[in-house]
Amino acid sequence: MKKSKKRIVILGSTGSIGQNTLEIVRLFPDKFEVVGLSAGKNTGLLAEQIEEFQPVLVAVETEADAQKLRKRFSKSPVKVLSGETGLREVASLSRADLVVSAITGIAGLRPTLAALEKGKDVALANKESMVVAGDFLRKIAARTGARIIPVDSEHSGVFQCLNGQKKKFLRRVYLTASGGPFLKVPIKDLPNKSCGEALQHPRWKMGKKVSIDSATLMNKGLELIEARWLFDLKPDQLDVLIHPQSIVHALVEFKDGSVLAQLSQTDMKIPILYALTYPDRLESPLPSLDLTAVKNLEFYPVEKERYPLFALARRALETGLSFPVVLNAANEVAVEAFLEEKISFGQIYSVVDYCLQSHRAVSINSLEDIFVIDQETRNKARQYLRLKGKQK
Ligand code: MG
Image (cartoon, rainbow, N blue to C red; front, side, top):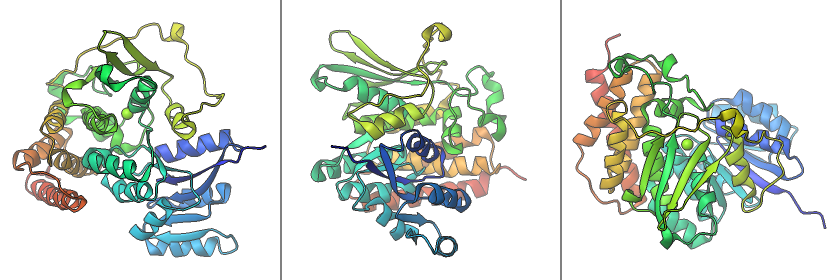
């Protein structure tokens, strides 16, 4: 009997992860079918994707864009929705087998929740939702039987290393970091690095937000918090190694001193493919790893002075409570301001530090708590930017 295709929804289909996921669908047209897509403002690319992949349901941010798309696709059966409710409908589309959650930032939280509530397996690329609401997401998944499958390359690595292992034998998990574009830059020059320089990631092709987060190493801090919830680990079981070649994505050490590592070419399509096929694997045309060409695999500890934002993230991981929510919200506002060239590279740290310093950690008892603290922090960060932002 012919096996039917896996029906997937992609939230954030015009972003970097979204586009890579569609690349996988192009590579394996008999394995996957796209049933739903969502995008923010890039409706030009979204329209091309609708044309090519023929989803049944689509969501965009504004009703004005939705109307334009409805007009353009008036002869096609695709239904176009808008706003928060539209996004939620796509996320919980009943005919979907798997939802790829690839919206950047806390904006990805509500749709991810909607998918899990509906019992949908989620391929999670939206790390921020795990950072601010990891405990909730885990509990909802446990209740509905949905699986959360990591897409982030490091977490995919950990996930693969832990496959078939007993958690009680686990000692420590290491995530690797390339170190970003400023690994070798003199530390005194860092505060004034430009947006263009910060976006030049040496190894990975990624979206803008995660590229800046990689330059500050905040990305790795967020990933530690993400890993804490994804794999139910204690903060002291988590560590980071700088590994400039980005070939080893994660290492897992067991109590007997044995270490398993996951390696692959630096291509996001590899962890995405695994998340789409888990627990199976497909024969893939993606290039295999030639270690004789790589030659050296280096590992270094994180330099604290080079990456002060990483230390803030580490503190948020250890303190827990509402700290990760504040960390994430302040960072999102600061990175956005940096991308708009309203603040310097060094001021990203100042904004996040200010918001954490002036916050008293409280316990999170509901999702509403998360959204309230998120909003408060954003307001505080914007106020700080108005006072201290660089004079144009
Ligand atoms: Mg990553």
